[in-house]
Amino acid sequence: MTTQNFSSLNDIIVPTNNGITYRGLDGDDTYILVSNLNSQISIVDTEGNNTIQLPEWSKIKSIAFTSDAVRITCDNMAVFTINGAERFSFDIGGNKTNNENGTISTFDEFASLFDLTVPESGQVSFDDDKIVYNDKLAELLKVEVKEEDSGNKFYINGDLSPDLTLSSSQTYVFDQNDSTTSNHPLAISETKNGSHDGGTSVQNIKFFANGYNKSENEYSVIFSNEDSFDNAFVVFTPSANDTALYYYCLFHSGMANDSSILIDGFEAEIISAKLNVSNNSTSHYVITQKNDPDITLERGKTYEFNIDSPGHPFWIKTTASVGTSNGYSDGISNNGISNGVIRFEVPLDAPDQLYYNCQIHSQMRGKINIVDSNTSGQIISDSTYSSNTGGGYGYGVGLIPVVDTLTELPPIFFDI
Image (cartoon, rainbow, N blue to C red; front, side, top):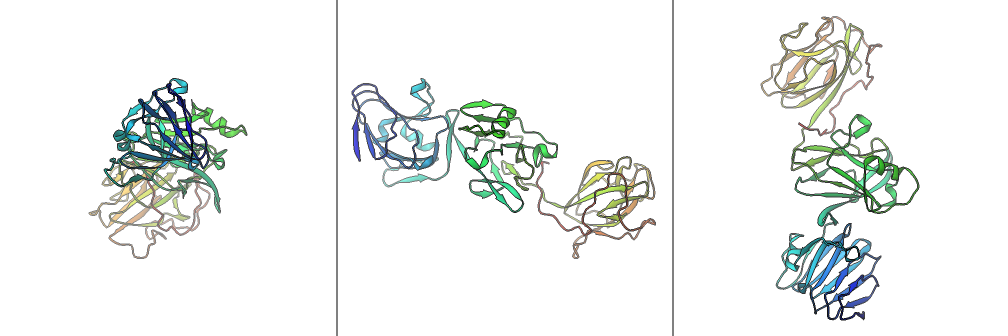
């Protein structure tokens, strides 16, 4: 490499030229690392109190330490090798050109930020993306968008809409600077598919573009036009109270598939099946195109009843009756609603026979059979109980036409 020597003053050095060794002389020199495409740069400085600065939004793809050197690989595959690194201080978030100071670390402390210890011999390394944010190192998640058979989808760190396991003790930065993310601003919600299904973004999320903190609306505007932008990041620090969350596109539905964000090892509950319940006038409950069908549920599994039957409160009971008495409560939430979700975690000691009834109309009723194992896999079958067993789903209020055969669904994650 060609060597470029500097003065004996307190120099501010921005090493960007590929194949150059930057050598400081006397003085307290500051080296500001700015990533440049595919550059290989060395830094040597054995005199004075010298500092390596990693400014805000600097990205580190990997890092390697020896006893007296460090090699930092940044985005664009720029590689900085600092020799005599034990003589440097490392400033996370600082930028001397703006008179900004970040968090100062010694060589050993800098290694500990990557859960590494400077070795006496050999080399230790860390290969996971980090980014400088708020004078600290945050986890970096690269966002891309690719077209699949079912439409555009988010890719995170190269994976198609993965589930993410995050910690409330960490900060995570979603990098939206890839050109494919244009017109697809990412956000996070407690509701799957976010605002497209009635949800809103969580409060502990921040949006940045062009170096400035933006509101969600301002961030959306930037992504909705053809203006160029850089430093587009979504910063998320989970709360200890968060359990299951969801990332989504502010503009387009379904871009994250059924993926979730699980916080602090939260174990999401598996929903074995979702049953859509509507009504045909005051005559029947309609469940998967059947009037008042028999329902077979398994002990130890969880089911959701999505109720859309205004004026016809849906009750799961120990006896077939109108009114609110004899309701079964073990493992059931929201029993007796006419709109919303009833969740039923079937207890292991649940009785063999339960019933569902309208609170008001006695003819709207059916049987719920509870079994240890449903070997047939058939959850919905023709009624053997109601006297009103006419076929078809009719034209009742709140009708949700769905497929005739209900099979078990993939796992669904939600907060409990």
